[in-house]
Image 1 (cartoon, one colour):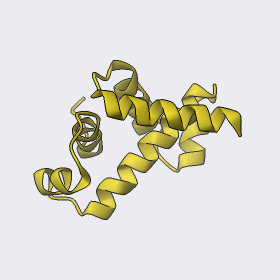
Image 2 (cartoon, helix red, strand yellow):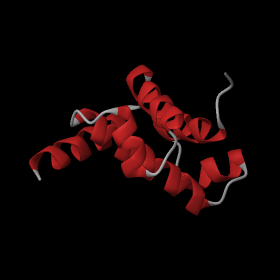
Image 3 (tube, helix red, strand yellow):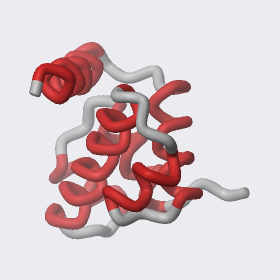
Image 4 (cartoon, rainbow, N blue to C red):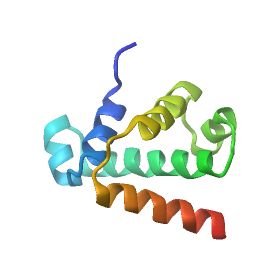
Amino acid sequence: KSITHRSLIIKHWLSGKEYSEISRATHHSIDAVANYVDKFKRVVCLAKNNYEIKTIAFLVKLSPSLTQEYYDLYRASDAVPHRVEELNDLIKKSQNS
């Protein structure tokens, strides 16, 4: 299965690129990039809070396959430190609320 453009955008984000750079590199609007990153972050938070993939897909309004792809990307990710920190902060906040 080929990597989706959404996953490519997430890989760019995890590598530390800013929305404007990702937008230029992938020919997507900054709003679209921000939307994909936001949904990715929500998938990670829900997964870290022990929600099942099908439930996460429903809540985030993504297909189960893309939801799984996002979570797999997160688990296999070699993200730059500030992205890891950003995700970890978000996960902590979601677990405290």
